[in-house]
Amino acid sequence: MNTAAKVRVIRADNPSALTGPGTNSFLIGESEVAVIDPGPDDPAHVQAILDAAEGRISHILVTHPHLDHSAGVPRLAAATGAPVFGFGPADAGRSPIMRRLAETGLVAGGEGADRAFIPDVTLADGDRLSGAGWKIEALHTPGHMGSHLAFRLGEAVFCGDLVMGWSTTLISPPDGDLVDYFRSLDRLAGLAPAVLYPAHGDPIDAPLPRLAELAAHRRLRSTQILSALDEAPGTAAELAARIYDIAPGLLPAATRNVLTHLIALSDLGAVAPLGVLSADARWQRSLAPPDVTTG
Image (cartoon, rainbow, N blue to C red; front, side):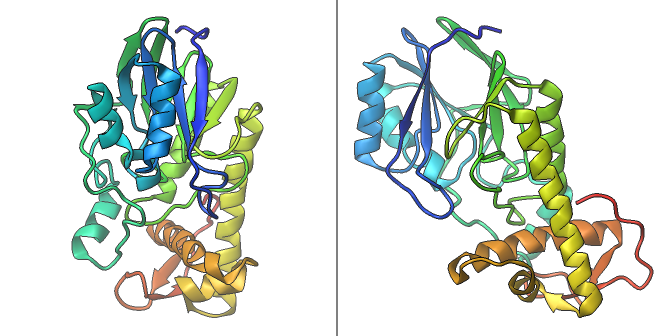
């Protein structure tokens, strides 16, 4: 795969606690330009992409349909006529357990989901795209979202929201799945990329240590949840308040992260809801918990 393609980044002006300094839109190539993640529906940002590409955009790629990544697609597609590539709509690629939870309505999600997003061309894992001077491979990397893709360009991987250098990733069920997240981290580690380009923040020049750090962090979080449940049952919100030391405004996101851990631990038999599994359920340690060694 070609590693010499020119890579440029245009950062959207949408900083927040969850987007960091803003969403990165990447431009790959020169005479035929692939854009990865057009970003939010911001006319100024889309115009900056158009100006940088100088009328040469041939492909529009989307890592996943969250509004800070894909809402700018209609403007960019209308201005360029370039086809839009992605895994599918916002609810595509969910794991079986997350599909069941979504269908029951007991665990709602959809934070920031772009429900209007439908790609012109659906990409499956391993599909390849090419333009003048570049070849890109699509990697299905669910975890943050079931329809999440990463894009490999030679020894570089554009990893969307799966990996960030400045923060951990929100995993909010039923869109996110902790077990899928671990598998996707392992998938990227197995590729041994030289650099990761996240959709928020700066490039990660030491990918393998960062991937290992993120996996270890999630395993530690599971241990903290189990220890908290040893003390007393609790809802995901109560457990988040007991475990996390963060600003109150971030507790809703922390609660969603705790919930995805509880669902994964429940599947392992380590914890159980007191009643029906739902977003508001109270949880307890199982009476005969197994030896839990993963997230």
